[in-house]
Image (tube, rainbow, N blue to C red; front, side):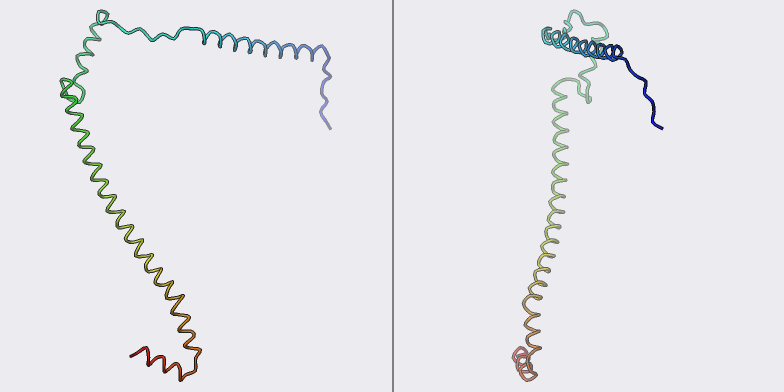
Length: 151
């Protein structure tokens, strides 16, 4: 048995339509307002604290900053970073060398496999048909060919 839907009056339909239009208009107006507001406001950078405004906590933090990576001055920090970069470069060169060795081994193995495959293909394509033709010859001619090959 089908469900029976209540009959909606024209006034109810009109009210729902008005509410939908009002909501849609409100969304459009808010979007336009936000667009206008965001495009017309000045984009100034955040204020930077002056040296005179620094607090005791800021001074303590500033005193501890140069001790990053165990360096006390900027020159020591640069030297420490250069040393670390050289260590990283040496490790990368070692890794590159091992990759090249492994790549060489793979290339040699692949070339050996290709050579073996080529030899087998050539043998199958050239020698086997000749042997088949020799086997199809009369016995006397087969013996003559065997003697000629064995000499």
